[in-house]
Each structure stands twice: as structure tokens, then as C-alpha cells.
Length: 311
Image 1: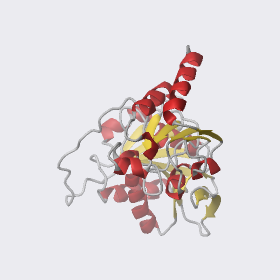
Image 2 (image 1 turned 120 degrees about the vertical axis):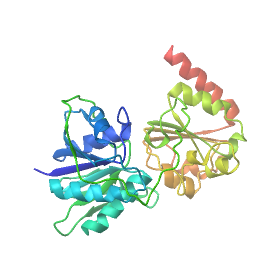
Image 3 (image 1 turned 180 degrees about the vertical axis):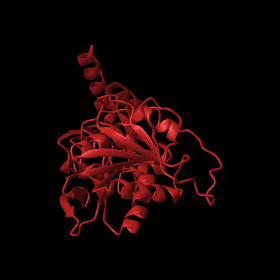
């Protein structure tokens, strides 16, 4: 049976949507074990899922970018003789898995949409214009990170898994001086959201209708680079080649021209709806549905219809 090791840099009181999806991917491949930087006493409860057989931690909590995470991963991978090692497609996870790939002299595929038990990974390239498959040519473990919204979420509960604390401790060369929790918005994380409403230069700094539409749809709010550079939204909301890559089921683009930088971050979305008063905007080339019109006229009608159908 394929031995699958899933890496979560940290787990909270409950797994995120992306983490639950990763368990689904792993469970389809073989026997699932999890390795995490979370402290041993806190790791078991959120991982009490039917698919998870065992959990590995360090002796103490390990936080990115501590190189001890790579030590933990290397030890766990050799302990279970992992054939496939999976992680969520986030910067801290990619950093740790890249270190591991060097140590194991193997390959790393980032932002994949699927992996097979024989070590074949599929991923979009060139702003989603093509899909490629990659496979290791030698008998070594495949390491891959997977995009959100590429599988169903695993929620079936199971017994509390056994936790094995490996002899790895936090590095003495790294000291975390302060941690600040991000303010809660009540909306899903942008990279994991199944619905995204994205604002561009066309909103002219007024996000009231964007927020209203997002609230009705339970959506995350994203933005073009122009909107974040103008200070209308934080740069963490930027979608594009130099921002966040999203693959929601529904992506609503409002007042965004849709140049290649923006396309690179959202072109793999399931359904793309574009609203722009410029009928020649590039975004209409990739949109499944396009509305040519002023967003101040279009959005209130959308919101009203959504509310009518929900009532």
C-alpha cells in the first residue's frame, strides 16, 4: 500500500478547509499519516478523522520558518518510508517541503491539482492555459503541494490518533518575538473560498456594493493589483501573478480589466462572471458570463435577485 505523509505546519482547534481537502487527496492514495509542527498535546484532537492512522510531532511546537521543521519532516518521512508527501499550497509549507526535497534528493511539485499513487502530479501552468503532468523517474518519494478547491472536504470522524513525538526540538537560532492574530472578517480565507468577489480599479474606492454582494454569497473578497496599490484593500487580497492564486467554483470580477497579471491568479476558476463597462476589456475573453455595464447599476440588481431567491 502507498504510504502517504501529510504535512501541516500548524493545526488549530479544527482543520481548515484546505487541510480537510488534503486529507481527502491522501486517503485516495493509501495509508495516511500526518506530521505537524503543532505541540504533541494539541495535535491529536483536530486530527481525529477516520482517514488518519497516526500523527507525528516534535518534542516541542515548531513554527515556520524554523529549519527544525525540515528535520521533523525528514525524520518522519524516513520513519514511515513515505512514497508521497503532500502539503497545502501555502508559503510556509512550500518553504519547509522545498528544504525536505533537497535533503531527500527528490522532486517538488507546487500548486498541483491532483496526485496519483504512482507519483504523477497534475498542475496548471502558463496562467492556467495548459495542464502538465510530472512524474519522478527514479524510486524516490514525490513531494507536492495541492491547491484548495480540488477535492471534497474530509469530515468523517474517527478515533483519536496515536501521537508520536519525534526527538526534534525548536532551533535555538530562531526566536519568535511576537505573534499577532489576523483580524476576523467573518468571510472565508481568500485562497480557500468557493466563491470570490474581486474588485478592480473600476470600483473607484467604493467597496460597499462589493461587500454587500460578498456577504449575500458567503464569498471572500479579492482585488486587482491596482485596487491594492491604491490602498482600497490590503495587499493580502491581491489576486494575480504576484498575489494569491484562487480556484473557486464561482469568481465574480467587478471593474477589473483582466490583463495577464490578473488572469494568472484566477483563470482556473470554475465559473467566471465579469462585470465591466468596457466591452473590450480582456477579462471577457475568459469569462463564462459577461455583463457590459456600470457596476453601480448591475450589482444592486444582482443583490436584489439573490435576496429574492434566498427568501
